Length: 183
Ligand code: NI
Image (cartoon, rainbow, N blue to C red; front, side, top):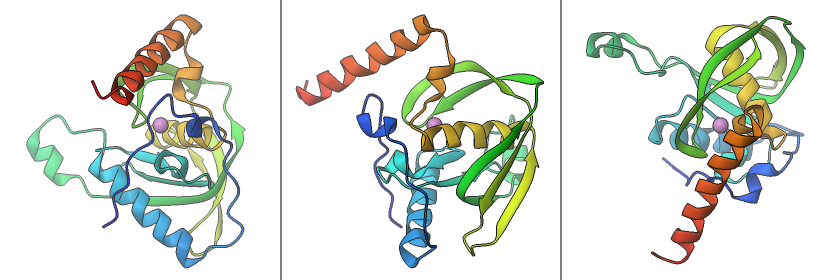
């Protein structure tokens, strides 16, 4: 178990463009494990490597775990469904759009409705180096678009109005300053 601290807005690391993974080594597999540990500990459903400070094009998600079920019985029936995407790349986006209330572990306790293409097709490598191409809709479509944004240094607040984005950015900048002052 190697849970890492999550990088929080306004840390400039979140604006880095992550590097492609050239070879799937033990180090990459260990990074994926650390990402799952960190994501589960924070109750997230998706995580990009940069969110634990590593600028590599690696994404994990587990949509079996979230969003949280309505009742405790339903919650118990949900199976974990860990998925790893190496070098994910969106190759097609539907014209049809969808609105979903998104959040991000790097912007804790903040959610807002985001409009994105309803369906996407994306390519990636599995952790065994197998190339895959899948068409996604629903939560997987939202998750992969949100996480690929992270790999390009983008955040879901970049899809909001400037007014909303500035408001949340200021709030987190102030909080970071307060933390740095030890108050
Ligand atoms: Ni995020």
